[in-house]
Length: 451
Image 1 (spheres, rainbow, N blue to C red):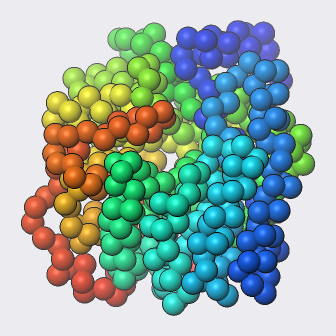
Image 2 (tube, rainbow, N blue to C red; image 1 turned 90 degrees about the vertical axis):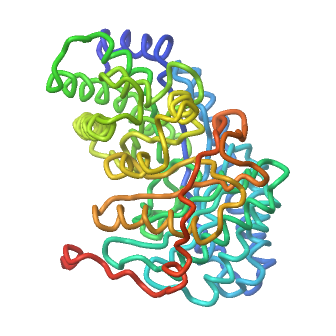
């Protein structure tokens, strides 16, 4: 239970420090939907989602009113669609359309799970499915896609890495009129997790139960305010303050998650305590790092500050709930964080530094715009680098990069809303094409041999 002081602190965090429930995400298993034809399967998919999630928007609105906590997004994640489409992969777009129509019908912001897991190998039906991603993302509004191309246990599937560089380019070209927006709905993972509530990478894992509620809580502004209150503290005290703040944020998230699960007749899955920024000032992970003592995010010391922040957030969350999961930590999406945007614009933050930061933060290279003429092989090489960090460090990493059609370094792509605006950042001009074209599998590291 919350005591009076905790209630007052929570009210203050909501009103002045941008605390919110970033998302309530319902995970839905679609395995029972597989039928003898693509058309029947698509109808089953639509009907199942509409039935399971028919009340998600109303319930989250009720909870927001009752508890006074803003709930920003309502989302759905589903069984990786490549599995559902396996008997008729050439008709996968039918399933994609059914998923998007169901998302519109129930009123959620996004639906994730047009996904494939090919970290150890890629069957013919999976390749056919992956090749459908550009068409599907260009023809839908709320559907998100992800592909897992590596893991610490299996290594990195470089054939899939090569293919995904080409798919990212094709998706950008298919959505050129919107600045390559389709790529904002496409994530390439290493070590993807099954209980992630955040888009665009959410999918409902095979090991999950039929219907699950996962909640993502976000509070960069709360953490920044806490650090501001102890301007002369040493780093040990700073870490303790971040842990205590993360504890309070997680408690609020667990309250909403349990109640949402009960009202939606679903299981309570996890609370993902990720510091997910928005383009609003006062809601920035970059601002936290600068409040810790950096002149600008991206300068020397940034990786150390981020490592401490991520660790303290996780420790505080774990003390508050036994159901902390997903990707809990600090996100560093460039276009969605005003501090990251401004640092990129003034040149103090580049892709190389962001890559170093991903070794210690949640996920990876996120919402980064690059020149539209960037070769597919270079995008594949960026994916491979990020996957290597995840594989070796036994952590989830990902790439969500946007080769903005017709744009060059110094230009900007504006997606609006929570997706913000992205300054186009330079990539290395030297080719990695020969490396990418080798294909095959980068073997798993020696420390993966644990059974």
